[in-house]
Image (tube, rainbow, N blue to C red):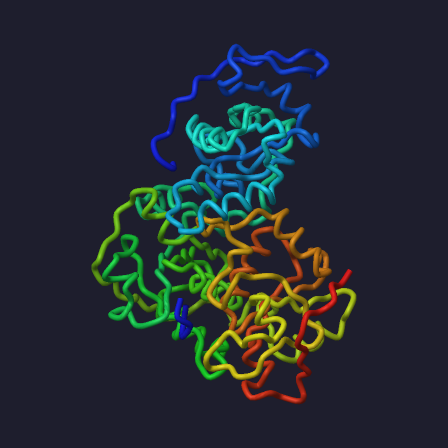
Length: 460
């Protein structure tokens, strides 16, 4: 992050046996209680929403969000299901065991419940079943979600704008000249985004990048000392110098996706209609086994962006609008996407910002443990956390999807990612307060912008 220093073993083969359920939904029976039991679509319908059952989507996060992967007829997840992806078991993370345990608890997945694990490839569910079995889970059932998806009468939930977060396979199909789902066939551009010049970017030349990708240095869209976005004229020139028009399908990614989300928010602000971010960043591309190239791809400029900038001006707001939002105590929230210690004034979070605290009247929207993390919004593989958990997290501080919400952080990176997640979820009246804490605090303290410190009372 700019200026801020930023399965398991062999899967056991599990044999499947058919469970027999009584007509009244009673006792489950199987040939061998140590084997995973299957459950039919008819019986699964009756179990959704029951307190002693939990339905778990074990596929990639992209499928849960809405993409039609592995041959499913309808994208998205069974309405009422939670997620625990088999991909999470493969993540190399020193805190993986603890993080996964916390995820199980948050999602209500426990040994006392009947746990239905569904997938569409016949593999993901088995991997999660093996993981749970090692933890003592006994009542595990398998299900093929393709059966659910082909029945149009059964409810499936896909996020309103799921297409904004794309799977690695979608990007691969795009650059291979295919026409992947939800692509209009117009000109596209792929960009690796990080702070620093191309020659200094380890994620572009040294480690390699997606074939054809061009490097974007975040200094192309923002400047100090506030690190706000550039002027509208300069942003238009930025788009044109990178060959981006209002109609270009623009795909952004990075080793740390935060930079990609920062640029994505700015592109949406200036008016690019089709902005995509690779869900999970570079790591997802590598995990899929796709090749990287280490050659330099130069920018190809164009003469005109094709629209007056900004074409979507309410997507990013400034200090006057932030104050208006704070003044509207009922219908609006200025949401702080910083760590708890930053919010209460224990630290500023930045070596170049001196004041500590928060804008008086703002509310905490969670983030992570420090100024470079967003673990409260991300799964362990850095994909988007599920919508219901994000909304439940907000409720604690009086934040609801129906309000006018503007997200801020120190200088706009963390908040930009949360803004895009809110957009994926389908929230309407949302924006990024670009100046964030850096602007509000005036760096040395500004009496015109009141500051609070200490632990706030939760708003209801």
